[in-house]
Figure 1 (cartoon, each protein chain N blue to C red):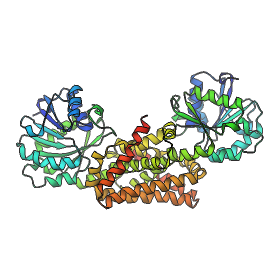
Figure 2 (figure 1 turned 180 degrees about the vertical axis):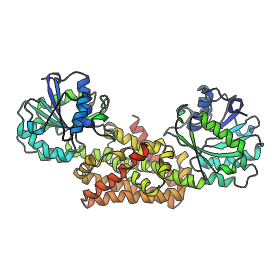
Figure 3 (figure 1 turned 45 degrees about the horizontal axis):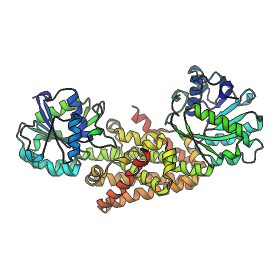
Figure 4 (figure 1 turned 135 degrees about the vertical axis):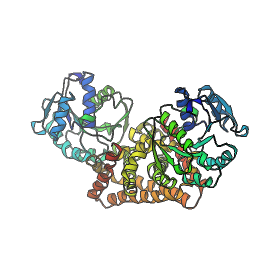
Length: 286
Length: 286
């Protein structure tokens, strides 16, 4: 079955779920998108923005849905995923979009329907939430990770591949543990840095008006992620605690080198630290 | 004399000097822009990009220039500014664009031509350098700071005000010490955070290909400033050392709170830290 004949259920019509639904609807490659959300306002917004065709609830079940996309915080995904697998048949597929994967694949490791689930992570997000923040073209050109592909049925994988193609994403395959290690470096630590930077400025700079007036594009860019909501990020840090702590310790140690260089007036060392950091350009601008 | 009748000298035709010149040239509100740069390639690029009309050297002096804009690293500005003031008359004006101000105003504090100098800081920049990175519209809507205005002559201030208006910037006035304190919070610490984050990832994530493939928009945004060159930033950190160290110590202490929360599985505390950081949204989105 191709995506275009399918009824798709989106559990959590927020930024990510909403953006996926919006793209599929705009491309007119689905039969129907059904939204499920605990937040009635999100459902109302998603309906009026034509992100979803109709709303439903978890209690009503998933019988008429071919493809169920879970786009809620990772702790809620861990709770709900086994219950969904309990209820679906071998022709239905479930996918998540969470930023951590080990905790999620672990919870369904021995589930008899494990192979109907595909662990998916689109590498895109913003500091905003809710269906009003959804952007159809958001995923274009970005990477998406499929974890532990060998544990998913071939037709389920094929369906997720089709979805990634429809979103114009390129796929990367890795196991859940490697995924969580890499995302700690590439995504999770950036959020902690940003939160801590915001708290630093809020703590030290009591003149809010001055922050507002002076805030340069550089500051706004570095602190942008600090707007991200705790409902999404606390569970991510919780589920990826060991990796995040490991990278956070390294980050504090790297910051301490800048401190040492300044305290000792060792500007040669400071230059070396900065020149080393400049190497990130070659990697990011590849 | 209005800007449009003036011959303007830009010392350092890089990102900032080039962007100012480009805007003035595009608006056709100057008579002539003369570029001075130790880097011959920058001069050649600036000429071919029509950012400057002609090139000159420091040795040739400034006799035909009405308005001299110094846009070079802050340590070089400290060296060159007194020499320029030595050579100019009471009808010529000098302005800098540096990110630190105390060290610069201090060096000319007792100069007989101090009042021909205006300490100016446009709150815009990117991680790129050189005249090829210049953008005419870069300053639009951004803040610019004039420091210690009382030490500058009225006509010199008026000229800089006209320039800020031509660049579509709004002016803020503060003394040099307050400026350096606020920029430590709003700009300088963001750069250290970004550099340290780049070094963290480069140290821990040996799989460069994975960084490249996975790097999300969030990571790229947080680490963008880490591309900024040491020639510009080492002198800034050097001249603003005490303020930067103060904010850096606070930042390490804020990061340590995230570490403690994770180590102690205190996710309530983690949520509080994140919710506090979220307050930056209200300030930035004002």
